[in-house]
Length: 433
Image (cartoon, rainbow, N blue to C red; front, side, top):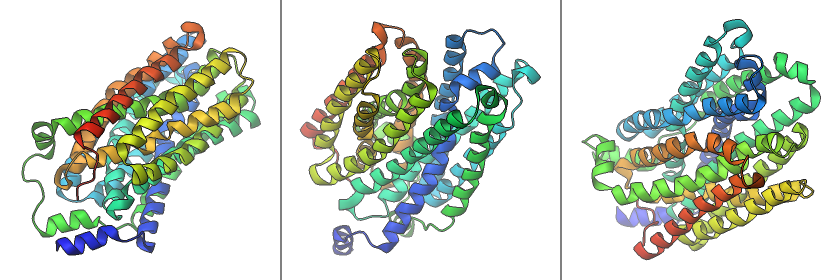
């Protein structure tokens, strides 16, 4: 059997692998669009869901707070879905998470505003974001495990990176739609109905993703464990915390770097451009779209680096690049944003550390508790850093002449450098089938 497995790990990607990667990435893009579209309309939502007369900066900060609430719900959704993913199968949870995302997204699109419901409007909005957080908590770890266990071992870096590229393509979809709506509709139309279009489309996208995933098959790794009766008999999350603490801590550290790349550089910077540096909305969203596109390319590049030079060196290179490119972008914004588009594109490339991090996570846990291991460490780290970061960035943008967000990214990138050195010294980072 070992010879068979070794042979399978040496094979190249076949047609079935490519189909799995494409369908998984497309479904992930549609679901992640549903999760992040909220942040691109933060300014509009802040105006509509809080009392009239609220200062723009305060309404935006409160809206970022509602956006951040979803991160706090991620660990619960991730742990529950991972438990069943490790016990009854990866595919079932992979499909259920999409459905759980589509419903609240559609409901946000038809939700009455403060003018109609008063204080109940932001309360209902917050509850729907919580449900979205539960869904994404199971989706992202499950997706990485699903594709990693379908492909040859020597192509895991490319596989999880292609899935990450698919997820970030959802960000690009949201950014492009936001840019188009802001360019096509007046401010009055955006407040009246324009923002709703994005969420109603998101609900439809989610149900399309549910349909796409019915064509996927269970992972060979899980099928083999079920056949050999090697599934975890204890509570998988308990085994993770008790027996795999080094893997948990390493995974949490690199996840923090991922949050800095995605939440700061990609998701909140377009809003910071408008509120702190007074960049026109259309230009800010166009820059965000360019960065989201280069982020997709950066994720694929990061996965190729993992398969070529290993997770440790790839993580080191991307962490340093993320710091330098973010500083370049924010320093340029300080002086008027003359080189906004090329510098934001460069920052997007190095935010491609998001394509390297999942390879570290997948390699940190054995198959029987892999889904739970990633869910516990990734979602807890994202709940802490992801929930705090949007609000913190909103404040930091008012400090250090607007360079506060870049200082934060630099600090977190140092954690990525430390994690890289640890992997080099300890030898961690190699996938275990």
